Image (cartoon, rainbow, N blue to C red; front, side, top):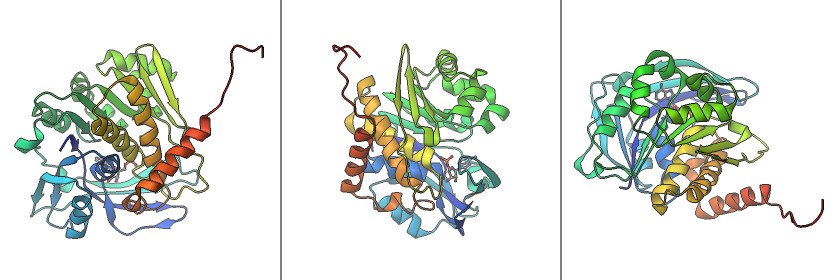
Length: 309
Ligand code: AMP
């Protein structure tokens, strides 16, 4: 186990212009850990599920080398449930229902073997829970945190507290604007960095992602895809690919983080091509490598700055 993942394991029910699912496997920790495992990391999940979480779902995670020792099974409870409906543009969605269930009373307790994790990915959850989990990690090399507008509205103080201990904040553009009060993303990233994280990773869906640090910024495009079926979990798969690559290579240089952004983008691009986890459950090394090659050719250009333009 070299990557601690704290986050939801869930039943999701999704509606897009292409159709509607029944209850399917979802949750931020699911997407993060699956993406990270493809990158060669060894993720261990801290979460809580109810007695209704089927064995086929735990098997799907375990057979990918994802450790579930940190998952509490609360047999009298139900598993977290989320349902959402996407608008025609697929960039916006309405949450129809969130039932916290087992996550409502979640008190994260890290197994002894998780406490030495060098890499920590705190998925979108109540910042109090993120903070409690992080406090149990002895000496992490890199802490990445994902959050959303809900926590900015309702538990801002707790979020600001946990942010002081975070190295990379991963949010979408609207969330970066809300947290910082700045519209321009360069200014927003600067303000967020003043809150604690040295790096700000801004996810812009089909418009790619930006990674900010002190005076530098790296931009990665999203792959232009023929069809986007279901964006659920794309942000988590992106963060999981990013975190998983860093954990597997054990290198937190900015150069390596740039590579990690491309790996995250590749995993996210697969996720949106089918409903839920369907696509990300069925990837091969060859598919991922081919996609990484597409990313390289997407932006590769030779320009000689010696010659006159
Ligand atoms: P994303 O599309 O990357 O925002 O992530 C979607 C996943 O996040 C779904 O699989 C949901 O189960 C999960 N999710 C949605 N809302 C929450 C929440 N409030 N807390 C934890 N997980 C959530």
